[in-house]
Length: 356
Figure 1 (cartoon, helix red, strand yellow):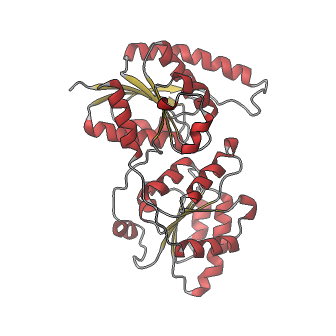
Figure 2 (cartoon, rainbow, N blue to C red):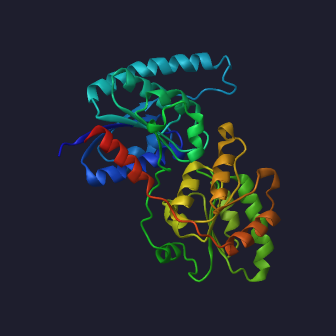
Figure 3 (cartoon, rainbow, N blue to C red):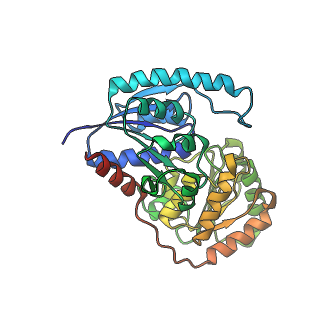
């Protein structure tokens, strides 16, 4: 069986990069691959791809996204920089000659997908959020298959139905058991585990609300355990004064903890929502109001509709609101059945379409 040559793009944030990691890890388990990855210079994909995929051929692109509003005069120079980048990407793709290009979106995808299409390289696109991003919406016409994580996303696309595939959002697999997670963080195994995170950079808003919550419940011989990713070391140090809290500025392999948590408190990023759905975990979601097209709110509502979510808007977040939500969610009975693995749906479609 021949080695697959694959080009990937989509990065700048973990929400774009982690689905790509999940797909590539799954594919590399069944086929030998040679990988060309277009990264955003200095961002998470650029820092991580060499470690995650030894031997990868990496091309770092110095790009920025469009300013809001889109008619801002500053976007003219950004647009021309994308055109220049597209020419250099086209040369790289022509030399590498991949079997197909897979894009997980973000502004880096615009010049890469356009270059691939001009070379008649098959293009596949995945959208992580419930609201289709600007780049993906404009590039959708080039995709042989456009994978969506939420059924309602299909309404944003002017594509024939047969080219839209509801796959869900590919997530990384958990590698260790709950017992191993609790031992790793020195937490008692007989108490409910609540994982708190505020996205890849943390959330001062969530940190403050949780600190107030911890102060309220510490005098009641707390019967809960918290694993809290703060995003900054000073907050983590401050929260370590509570004996039932394990706080860190950043936690590697947080997916393992989410997979076995009794409850997760989080922003509404696509990756976290996908992990909660995939592992069938309950979540209290505080959507970031600054997210483009308010997509975190719609992501959160999708989780709420399947019974796994409880949404608290930023303006309503207090320690008391959080305490009430935690009590309700820990007692909520759910009958949710996790869907088929999204990564399997994605790979089945691509390998069947390309007959490779």
